[in-house]
Image 1: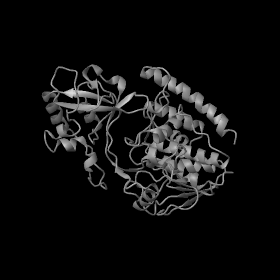
Image 2: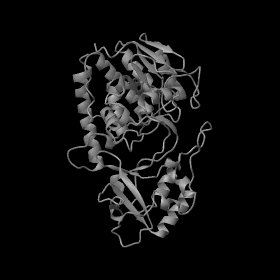
Image 3: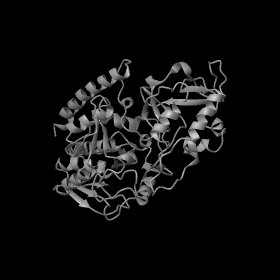
Length: 438
């Protein structure tokens, strides 16, 4: 047994990640103390004291076997995921998505964990990180006291309390004939640039400032940081504000004869370049409005979105800087992180990290852990969290671009099929080699 892991394993937070982590450990005979401050102390978003309460929606994304979320679900099923098993038990008709009856789903999770002999549930707020092996799975609404504890350990001046996320578009949906590669004042092709004429710019500006935005929840104060203002907020400060900000046309040489009055820049989003993020386009426009307005940009007329932009209160760490491949804090390897606080986005991905953390802890108890292959969906999440550029790290759900890319270029549908087949083979081999032997 690895002496660095101490029992019982303390898990802070009984959301999707904490619940999955507790289940995976307990079913393997590991004693767990699961801390959940609800119902004694509710967060502004939660309504009940039940575990794994779904706050924003009741969907756990696509079940399409070629969709990254579908691949992830299949892998979690192979590892007896409590979250996926319970979701399927209380599934509602939702096309290709896995939607659930929220109340029945969370009630069943709560009952399952409360009744497990290896799990001790403690309903109290954790203000200080306890000694021993601990999993912090407190989600995007981590309490101020615990947030300060994490700040002390990491040395970061602050954690991020608001996501400022730009939209991401599929690379193969871009019209490159209207765009060019280049960087401001540099001889490199790091950015894809869309030049706008004066007429194109002012039409875009008018539609942007008049587009509908999503409303924040009642408990959220409308506090924007100057460094990450939503683009529509910048635009409202004046017709030409964007020309001195993210759309400034200086430092670039356009190969096109038309005069470049403004320019929109896109940056490669994934390690294998299958998608681009819109630089400086963090937004809280409604999703339909994003599609309508951003398709006015030359080259994006037919753009398909991997993810729409959004801005909401959140707490997450700079995972590539702070976490190792096993989801441990580099400065305190006896502390693991799981769920949205790691920088994953979505119910499904949160549960997946809880599952992975449990598997790694179990391996540590039995020897040295074997990381999940980057060719699997579970491993791809770890790849994104730990190997992304820390300077540009943003929360994200599972995407095709997170997987280790194929050795040759493929069209998106061909690539999705290849990745799905390879992931299934690799996860089954990993389970047989690593998990089944214990």
